[in-house]
Length: 77
Image 1: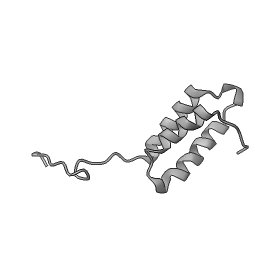
Image 2 (image 1 turned 90 degrees about the horizontal axis):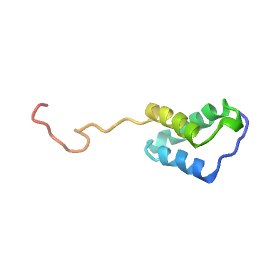
Image 3 (image 1 turned 45 degrees about the horizontal axis):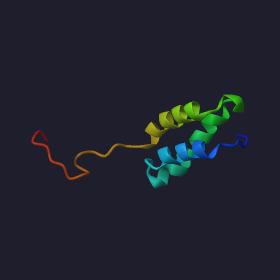
Image 4 (image 1 turned 90 degrees about the vertical axis):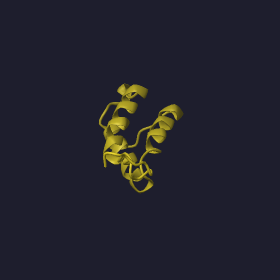
């Protein structure tokens, strides 16, 4: 993977999505995003592509909390 640059807004967008990823998986998420983005020519990279790629990868690294984890109780158990 060759290095590439991002604007401050693009980096903020990626870091905002990374905040939802558990800290022990965040490095792998950021590497996956960088790898995915490096496959596109720099002239085609923009906020829309970056968000779409990072958001699609985010689902691989985030597990939504279950209701039991948050102390909610259901009458349907």
